[in-house]
Image 1 (cartoon, rainbow, N blue to C red):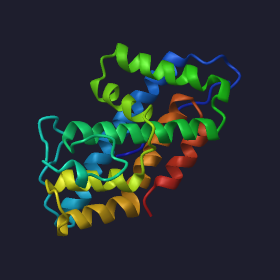
Image 2 (cartoon, rainbow, N blue to C red):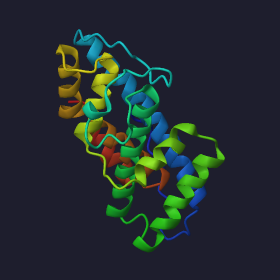
Image 3 (cartoon, one colour):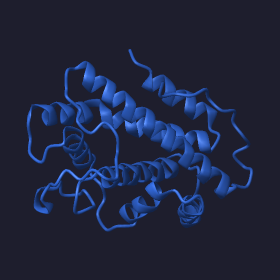
Image 4 (cartoon, one colour):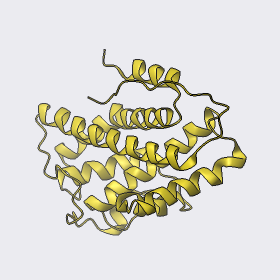
Length: 208
């Protein structure tokens, strides 16, 4: 189940409590990402794909040479830890874009919003997010195809393409990354108590 019950809207003119909003956003993004990962595994297993690395384990490094790593992937190795951090980094990109696009904050508030997100994650000792901030503040934007390819290599535990890697890539590129974007947008809309947007996203994401 990727979707939760919509929240009630609050007065959009109420002064923003960045700490509460960012904490709620982080919690919802973590929940959404966990459900997304579980759904991806289920889809792949049902399609007969052998998923070797079923969890994002920080102790698993697939041993890919640095020169073979997808271009915008921001780390020099593909491991459970770096793949998760890159996914979160991509989620942060999506969250910031969505927040600005829907005018939840103004451009003059962006720094405060980002600072609050970093502060909340650091205070809560959320190591997964701490590593991802280096991704967000880096000079290179993450390309969703590169994240998809890194995930595919990691899940298949392969450093070169094979049938499993190809199928995982196609699943992620055709709908998997779009679903991750959707759950990320849902997390942002929920954190900002935008019930109308939550319902709109949920209708869009419903299967069939």
